[in-house]
Image 1 (cartoon, rainbow, N blue to C red):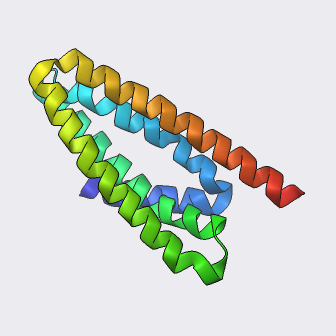
Image 2 (cartoon, rainbow, N blue to C red):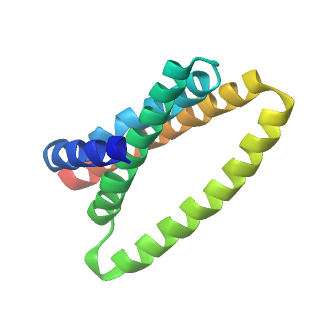
Length: 137
């Protein structure tokens, strides 16, 4: 929780200055967790846990701010609801998939997490570029 708190403070501060670009670090943090967590080294596991906490802090402090920046004020509450529903559903599906992959093949789990984070990074970049174009038009 300490890593989450520190990351939340740092990325909240950074978000106020560079907006959604601060989220570009998130896929890298998440992708690093499985290889570290499953190495068998206590130090690597601890680093993985700290990175996961940092990723949660980045997400908790800035993703909601990005939603607020992307959605007009009259529909913000609905947007938060949709975001929370999608995030919760994805967490369930991701947890089930990760558990199934863990039972079958640890390298497959690490690979799927990495691929998922690359896709997330691409979607984030596309979204940020779209927002920049709309705002400058």
